[in-house]
Image 1 (spheres, protein in one colour):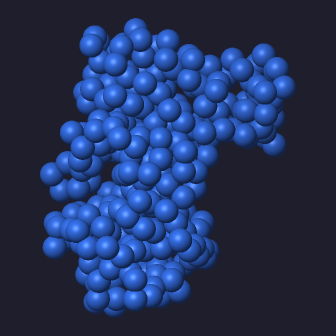
Image 2 (spheres, helix red, strand yellow):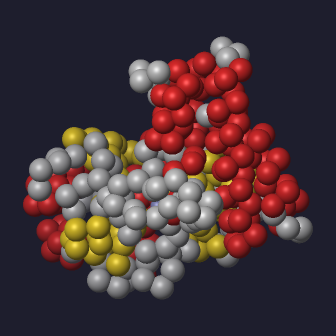
Length: 304
Ligand SMILES: [Zn+2]
């Protein structure tokens, strides 16, 4: 295993977060810049600029997390829901520009890998992570390895069907009744609008619940119960030791979601999985994606 640092890059809808990270997951230096919204070439140029800003002789790999399914065989970002990036050969382009090993992954997979290697999931071989934000991202570590499916596009846990023929999903997703439509920050914001008017959002809902507002608590409990149904299914499929809840909304609302979610999970999940599973709140905050992306870079280096 080669020493040195990796640069991890988390491509978000509004910001590109990048950092130099060591093998223990410690962030040595950070950089951030806005994500351009106008063209693919501009997004690619800014990703390169973020890496160029940080790179030095200690850097042996680059890893990128993008909000899109990834074609691992070709090293291609398939299609971002909220960004002008489609069929983008990011791995080859970054390798040609910087001459180091380059790894590529879905942003939620990267966040799960970050929490697994350096956060709430340290030392676990089997975990499921859900990031509740604008959408719902999912990441799975199974048997001590990131689970990515055949082409690398898995696991899109936010887009499993919870309610047959239910609420329409978001963005480019054509599905109905997906988990994302019930437990994302966007879904909570929609519930807040309905109950408290157009200026209320998911975070206001959490603040109101903290102040003891019964309606706000009730709405969050409902989100929690949907979450428990989804997680119950994931526990039955993957048999994890740990479920990690992250993302801006997931972390903020953790204390209100966990109990109702756990109650439903205990009903839906089978033994011995349901007694074995523990819960944790994500520890790395907004750095989870870039730290995990750096580990994806190290993974590419170690495989080469
Ligand atoms: Zn969907």
